[in-house]
Structures are given as C-alpha cells and as structure tokens.
Image 1 (cartoon, rainbow, N blue to C red):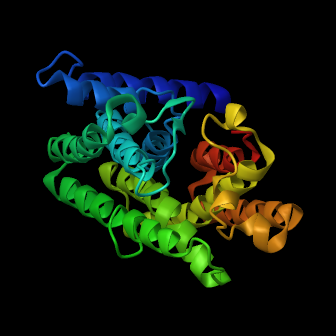
Image 2: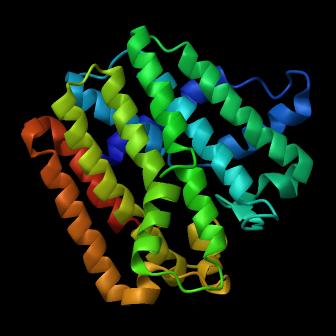
Length: 293
C-alpha cells in the first residue's frame, strides 16, 4: 500500500513538474536545461507527496490541482539543493547520483538556476486552483518555511556557522528543525490550506510535521555515517569531514535511532483524531526513519 502511494505520488509530482517547468529547448535554453537537470535527477518527491496526502487526509479525497502545489514545493526544495551544493556552501560534486548543477553547468548558471526555480515556484503558486485566501496563506507559509526566521535559510546559516565548532543540543535541534524540518512542515500545512482545513486540524498537522521533520533529519544523520556515496546518491561522510555535530555524534547510533523512533510515535499520535484517514501519513512517517537512502 505505502509503496504504491509513493510511486503514484512521485508520478503525479513528476507529471506536474513536466507541465509547469519551461521546456529544455525554450530560449534561453541553458538555464532551462540546468533547472531540469536538477529537478529531474531522480528525487523521491517526498515533500510533494506529504503535501498531497495532507490535503487528501483533510478533504477525504485528493483535491483537484493540488499536484501543482506539490510541484511548486519540489521546485523550492530543488533550488535549496542546487545552492546548498555550491562551492561557497557544502561544495558537493554529487547529488541524487549525478553531477551537481554547478559541476554540470558552471557555478554562475547553477546560482541562476536555483533563483529561477524559486521564482517559477511562486508563479505556479499564484495560479493555484483554490480560493484566493488559501493561495495567500500558502505563499506566506512557504516564504516563511524557506526564510531566515526558523526557516530553511536561517537553518543553513546556523549550520555553516557551526562547522568546526561544537554546538549544544538546542543549536543542533534548531539547525535540523529549520534547515530540513521547516519545509516538511510547510509542505504538510499548505496541503491543509489547499483543502480548507479547520484551525484545529492545521494545529495537529503542524505537530505531526515538527516531530516527523526532526526524525527525518536524524535518520539522514544516521545514513550519512552508515551508507556509502553510491547507496545514498550523494557524498557520504560530509558532516564528519566538516566536523559538524550530529545526533549520532552526540548520542551514538543506537540512541539516535531510539530518538527518531520516539519522534515518529509522537508524530503519529498527533493525527489520531483523523482516524483511518491519517493511516497513509502515519505510514510515510514510519518510512522516514526506516528508509535506507
């Protein structure tokens, strides 16, 4: 059941991305080729799937057009990866099993490709097929989730500033919740807004997202030290090389795994009031900490 959900969600996100991104031949073609190189590099489409399944849980059926919101979220996620890989940040050569954007197209084009993906995402969101009030809330949520205050960019900044030093646990948790968890939370919440969720439903989904998002990053930390670059599709051991403090480094692998598992239990309990409609999101949450790449 879960495998089929993930496959179908990935197909829906890919089809929407194919429709919404400029063609590789569209002038100026170099930037559009770079955008597509990174977007269609084989990602799991986890964030679009979380968005779509959150909307499905709230409404009972998959709302028409929510796949386009998922595609916009994937554009934002991919923009962050393109910039994260740049020499000035993580300086990585491999992403999703293929050369990073700046390796394939040059640093200048990669910077612009990331910028362009971000702008394309907001253009798509401005045209979403939902009430205007919901569109505004969606745009506000994703701008905040990718921003500097408790958002992705803020988390990236603190992460960079924490290299070669030993941050305390609150700082490490802030990095994980902001750099990775914030966009996961925003993916879930925007699905709620698209589907017309009530205030109490939004709060429960937010609690789910905060716990699941932190668990996801702890699982990533574990994979970084237990898997090879070939298995991960990206350079393994980067956090160790940069002397970054991670949950496995602070607590050991076994304790980190226990913490991730407890966070998932907390996340799932947040959705109990949705009954059977929450079963898919709960399955996805468990998958977040059980995956092998």
